[in-house]
Length: 337
Picture 1 (cartoon, one colour):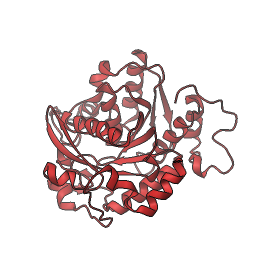
Picture 2 (tube, rainbow, N blue to C red):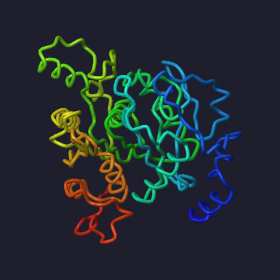
Picture 3 (cartoon, rainbow, N blue to C red):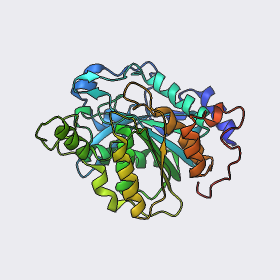
Picture 4 (cartoon, rainbow, N blue to C red):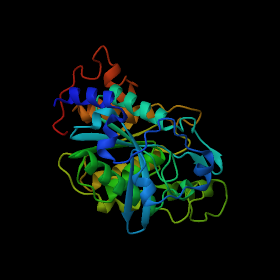
């Protein structure tokens, strides 16, 4: 069956073939993810997880978790898909950008991203967020990253994917970096925007500037974190993978200097790394979600890293919205996937 026919069949059958991929899965498109669970955490059982639509039960050295994900229809039958990790949704006890806390909304966002960037998409919910079990207040620890890594493995196996692209913004960008340090060998493109790769240096420097004694925790008061930049020695070598980091030199949240340092450290280890400069949204110039999504599409399409740098700087439209063919104009296809 052709991929187009598979998509049509999935839409007609309802649930985007979820029943075939996750037996006994619930089909509640109006599921709402509560603010109380975001703030206080969520627990569940393996049985409940396995009966939940678009969820995988993961187990690793530090425990277990039920991780939710929201796929586009064209993931079915695909050989490669983008896994995208959102940023932090809590700033202390303050909720940040959580008005899309419905499963149906997240599935629509995944479909929009897939069309705009012309590749299959999977939005992955970090622990304690969007229905995933765990505590979002415990973010950036090794357990979170082991859970995300295991979830990518489980989802990849469920759909029969051969390769993955990884993308993320801010805290999700740190997730991308962490998964690379966990030794993944199946990554074609890794795109991370506004990433706090050296969260400890960021907190230490902030404390020094304010005349405070640094307590060893990050700026969100997370202690004992997995500081991504300290683990670059375990990033697997790959002759085809591309790592694209995107930042704004004016970013007042995750300063560009730490993204530059992370890129330099990876380059020194022989990895194919490109650092692009974009224009971040908001008063802190931190919002580069749109560019990490678009760069995933450009990388997947084979545009050269040099061309992607130009497109990020120009805030060029996503491939699916590029009616004038700006992205491919004058560009040679890259040799990597």
